[in-house]
Structures are given as structure tokens and as C-alpha cells.
Length: 274
Ligand code: SF4
Image (tube, rainbow, N blue to C red; front, side, top):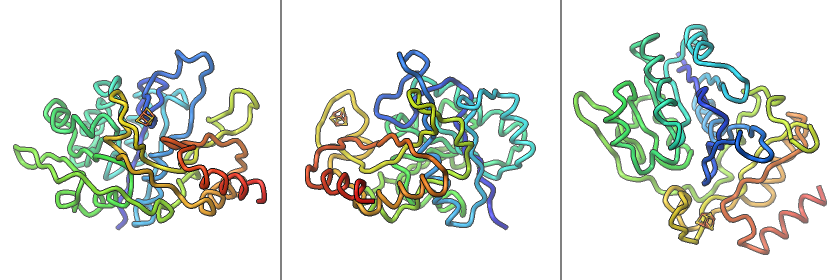
């Protein structure tokens, strides 16, 4: 039987959760929620591996812990994946405590840039958290489905009375091998561009940055080598946003978008031609 996976943005405030600058959105001069790209990428990979996935973005939909608990009861997931930030982690991981109270056998997993550095500390502090996924989302996430995460790179986990930790994962070079984010799993009307009032989505075009700004998570989490999706693959993803999801506004997410001049020109030319 396929595993049921619930992936959540917990109801702990409107935050930028996937950017290098994790910050509360409500304090911005112009605030708007963006679709949870990393969660949707993880869902697409898990789904390709046979899982049944559900995504809930509680801050964007204005829903609370009570509704989270109701979702746990109605969806009955085998695995809960919580997307956390450094500033909200204590509140975010309440999700694991609630999940265990509903189903003590559920596997609770946390994912977020903060955990790349503080995985063991967090596992020690939060006894209802079973597994930490470290690093970028890629095919390794499927190891949650068959329990092979204990021998897969980039995981930290609770094992009996102690903690286990595998080595850091290599970065995925061919980003075009990743499926496009599972945008069908969210209510796309929750994410509206503040200026045009039309649906907004996010695409990721590259990962990594060669600079070494000491305050930035990117060199640690995504490495110093820039890995870009080929322009043709990005345009294919844009086409899917338009034709399948009726979404025409796109926020481009890349750690250092203009670093490769030829690649930028090829992408822009291809986009105009298309
Ligand atoms: S230049 Fe690179 S390392 Fe510096 S803040 Fe930007 S993404 Fe981070």
C-alpha cells in the first residue's frame, strides 16, 4: 500500500521559508505569500516514488492548529514533513507533538535550512521529532518512504535511545532531472501578485553561489558551485505554469540569477520566442 505523506507549512506566521533571508512577511512594505516551492518539489518526487501526498499551507490559508489536527485525523498520514525556519522552529515543531498525540506511529520529519547546521541539537530538544532532512530537496527525500534514510546521505534521526547521522549529501548537478513542483496539490488562488492581483508562482532556475557572505545560508546549504537548469527545461516549466495551472506571474528563485551572462541571455531569448 502506498505511504500517505502530509507536508505542511505550520500555522506559525507568514514567513519566507525557503529563501536565504528567512523573515516574517507581515513586516514587509509589500507582503504576499509565495507558494511553498520546496515542499511542492518534495511532493513531486515522493509522488513519483509512489506516495500519496497532501500539502497544507496554514499561514497562507489563514488556518490554525485546530485545523491542522483535524487534517491529521481526516488524512491519516503515515509521514508528516514540517517545513521550519530558525525563528519559528520551536512553534513549528509543535506539529510533531500534535501528530504523535493523534497517531504515535507517525514518522515526523523536519526540513529547513536551519537544520543543516543544528540537526542534532534540534533532535535532542524536540523528542517528538524522529528525522531531520538536511540540505536541498532532491531524490534522497524518497528514502523516507521505505525507511532507508538511516543509510542515505543527509539525514539525522532518532534511533532507540541515541541519535544517528549520515554524512552530508552531494549536490545534485542535473536539476532538470527533478520533476516540476506538484502545484496541483495547493490552492493556487492563495498566492496573488500584489501589483497585478493575478496568481503568482515561483520557479527555481539555479542553486548555489560562489560568494561567501558570512550571514548567508546558501554556501552551506547549496554549495559554492552554481548549478542551473537548462534554459529549455525552465521554459518547459513556465509553459506548464500557464497551460496547466493558469498562472502567468512568476517569481524567479535563484541564488545568483545573473552570474552566467550567456545562460541568462539564452533563457530570456527562449522565453521571448516561446
Ligand atoms: S551573494 Fe551568494 S552568498 Fe552572498 S548573500 Fe547572495 S546568495 Fe548568499
